[in-house]
Length: 256
Ligand SMILES: *[C@@H]1O[C@H](CO)[C@@H](O)[C@H](O)[C@H]1NC(C)=O
Ligand SMILES: *[C@@H]1O[C@H](CO)[C@@H](O)[C@H](O)[C@H]1NC(C)=O
Ligand SMILES: *[C@@H]1O[C@H](CO)[C@@H](O)[C@H](O)[C@H]1NC(C)=O
Ligand SMILES: *[C@@H]1O[C@H](CO)[C@@H](O)[C@H](O)[C@H]1NC(C)=O
Ligand SMILES: *[C@@H]1O[C@H](CO)[C@@H](O)[C@H](O)[C@H]1NC(C)=O
Image (cartoon, rainbow, N blue to C red):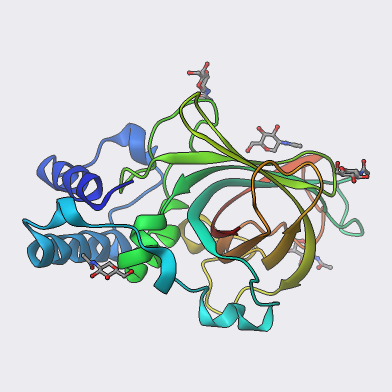
């Protein structure tokens, strides 16, 4: 999306004062994170008022967060930064304390935060932490991600148990390719990461380094998952159902 759209959408939201319940789904309390978000947006509006139409999305200065430096460095050129919002899915063979949840995949909507990353990295990080507290987006609609009105870029799911897939073909006009990937490296999320909705849960899922495999459509080389919030399963299956869906948000960096 373009900066202008972000500003206008946000101004509209501020003007409407209290965002509606169907957006928040009764999950989000207006808290300090959201207040900080609106304060930053307001200051950007003041700073760039009148010049928003000329804002571009030059990704050349966008870098992975510093804590990702222990993962292999990207060899490609950064093409997109997306905010992912969905669930990490697990199964439990039984509901006892002796059984450990096993990951079976993830399902998430990906939203194009490239322009926000290019110019407002503080806003990007704040948004990633905020959106886990908003209602889980419906995967079959094009609705932008609240509260910043970020456009849908694609869908993340597993093609099979070992193949995380990022399908960036959403409409006949938006055919941005399909990255099929393989996990090459992982690190724990940094201490202090958001552990779940309302910062309650089982922890932030790992940061990942993925490389693409045969079947990829487009020039995608590498995908990183960083700045994760939530997504971790409980340490054991005590009292759990046979399938568990754990809410998460994260940033995905796509290199070509
Ligand atoms: C994972 O959870 C999502 C809900 O986020 C659900 O739609 C999907 O079917 C689940 N996928 C698997 C493989 O369990
Ligand atoms: C956006 O970032 C680019 C570099 O990526 C910079 O040249 C430009 O001045 C920035 N624009 C705004 C509005 O911050
Ligand atoms: C998601 O959107 C589709 C298409 O609009 C609709 O049929 C479905 O009921 C929605 N699902 C949820 C959980 O809202
Ligand atoms: C999963 O899909 C990948 C890519 O198509 C393939 O190489 C791999 O053998 C598949 N693995 C399983 C367990 O089916
Ligand atoms: C099993 O999980 C429950 C709930 O998450 C937790 O309270 C308990 O301490 C765990 N037990 C062990 C042995 O880790």
